[in-house]
Structures are given as structure tokens and as C-alpha cells.
Length: 230
Image 1 (tube, one colour):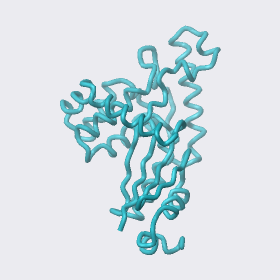
Image 2: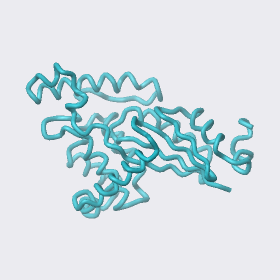
Image 3: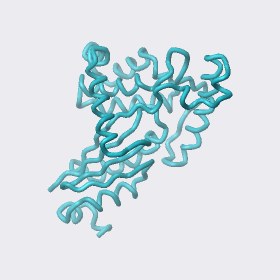
């Protein structure tokens, strides 16, 4: 029996990915060991200037980024109905002068995966939770290290991978893989089984994931797991 592999392409800061978490968890509960969830990082914000309005860019740097944070917080809140997962945007300050990119978050996931592969998914979930539910400024290294400790990942091993170029090399590999599939917007989901694949662009719910799984799964997978969809 072929395993179903779902690869999510995202950035840890993404509210849309946070809203897709319930759908992914339901698939895991339904399929158990027959499904494997993978994560592929892509830096959504390389510099906040690319996302700021002309008026925001015309302000002094700190004020302009503060205005952008406030606008981004409203975008996050508008995404809550997608998955029904709450967000807390009170005092949202993910970006600031000297913290103009989401690169540290992507590097943090790669470092966690290299340092302790078995805890990488839990780390990613907890990093997202800290960002959009607890409204912590997770582009700061001390905030990232807080999540490392919560997840029980060895801090020395994590920092070594985070700082020695290993995490950056892994992130660049992820970026090349994403681009090879023609993915230019996030999130996206690649569903694979038995040599077949389906690509979903944008946020997903449980039904969309199950339809994609059914479309790529052979009969040996469909009958035990999806009898209602045959």
C-alpha cells in the first residue's frame, strides 16, 4: 500500500497556513500512518518594503513598519473564517527596524529539522502558534529560542545549524524545489501517492485535501480509507 505524502509550502508567519492546520490534523486522524506530512519553507517577506504602501514607505522607518504591522494584523484577522482558528493581533509587532524579513522563521524551522527531525513539525506548529495566537515578535532570536526550549530541542544543536549555514542551505534546497514545481504563491500543497501527484494552490479545507488524495490514490488506498468517496 502506497503512503500518501502531503507537502505544505509555506512560511511559518503565514496566517493562512495556521488556518489550514485543522484540515491537516483531520487528514492525519483519518489516515493515521498511511499519510506523511512534510513541510517546505519559502520566505514570504524578504523585506517589508516590498509589501508596504507608498504612504508607509514615505514615513520614518519605525512608523512606516508599525503602520504595516497594523495593516497586516487586519489581513490576518480577515483569514480567521477560513479555518475558524483564533488569532490574537493585539500589539502585533512581527516586523521592526532591524527585523524586516521573515527569513529567521524559515531558518528556524530548517535548523530544528536538522537538529531534531522528529520534533520539527511540532516546532513549526508551536512557532506559528507563538506568532499568530500569542502575538509574539518571533522574528527575534530570543523568541525563537523560547520555542526551541518549549519543544525540547537541544539549544546548542539548534543554534549551530541556525548559524553555520546548514539551515540556509536547506532553505535554498526548499526554494529550488518549490520553484521547480512552478509554485510562486503561498500556501500550496502537493499531494502524492503511488507516483501520482496533485498540486493545490492556496488555502485548503479537509474536503479539498481528501478530494486531492482520492484523485492520486490507487484502489488499494481508496477502499479502506475512502469508501464514502468511491
